[in-house]
Amino acid sequence: MNNRKILISICSLDEFKKATRIAFKQAQAGASPEDPIHRVYFTSEEDLFSMLSPKRMELLKYLKKNGPLSCRKLATLLNRAYANVHEDVKQLTQLEIIQKDEDQKLTVPWDQVDIAVPLVA
Image 1 (cartoon, one colour):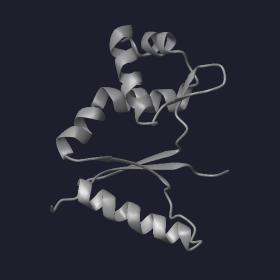
Image 2 (tube, rainbow, N blue to C red):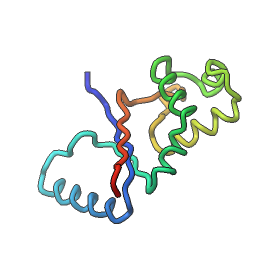
Image 3 (tube, rainbow, N blue to C red):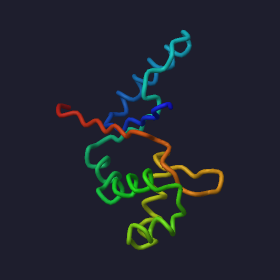
């Protein structure tokens, strides 16, 4: 089984542009992409932890273990208000951390979420 990973990290716009240029040149040269291939970057630690709040991390873990589920079922099982879970799902779906399957149920396609926070700017 393929272990699907996503890397979530902090990166300035300049660092992102530089990494993108390097990856593009490597791809043009025929080099294989490094793992993990899917990345989500935030420009600040505050933004990252705001998006990946404890409630959203709980939702991700629960959905990975028990999914696929509808948003309403997920809210019920987590004992949370539907509107709050719906907003969390909307945000996490935009980042492709959560996806919908062919039946439009929510699923977490990742086996591992790596969060990297540099201690030195």
